[in-house]
Length: 318
Image (cartoon, rainbow, N blue to C red; front, side, top):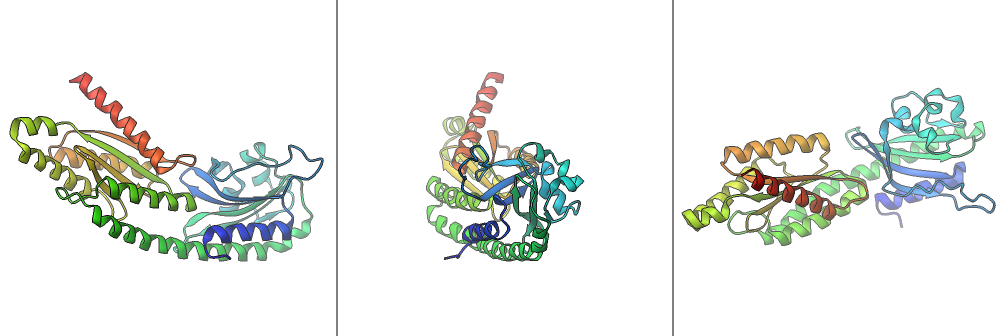
């Protein structure tokens, strides 16, 4: 039963492979400079063709500007090229040197606002008959239908996030009002499911305060609690409604920003540093971006390791 984008993508690719005969079909996501493979459908290896399979797995990335699809989206090449050698934009694409592509088919996948999400595309090692060019209306229709399913699910994903945060409300830290470790783990797990399904980017920040124990010992626990509250307020002041800030325990905090690319993450890190400085909060920070091949739990571990390195460096300098 086709009831979601992943199932629709697989059914569409299988149908087009049978109809047009190209060996490899993919549904991809563009994210910054990356072209991310979300789903694939490849013809079974035939006798006597050992080594002929593409072997491209979901999660594989290529530079977006190297691809046939980037040229197709810009209008530099047609949606169906029975022979890529006859289309200069495709013949000279760097991707042509990495994978055999005698024939190419591609159409864009778009969000509800018309922005580019990715592509539905097909490849074959050998040039194909010119007659496959007559299938452009079929391929375009398949791409439009997939785009509608995608747009509906992405809209539903926003509602899911609100529901996730409502579930996490039961795990609030009583002092700061932030979600605690249990709520953090819940939201990270659910957000990873969406990241894996749609190729969303995400940024994770790990933060450890410098002075809580010293202030508790010298000024009293009330002063230490006030520092924790100021930290929570500073972090929440620079996040969006879809982002998450958590107090993981003691003087440890974490932040999760979804659909956040490298440039967004760098801007966020600067805002966090400025907000903490304005609140008179000293802390060690670590940040990492979720990339294909790493889930959010692994991404947080990388951010936490970077935070630990920053904390050790600060102790050496002091």
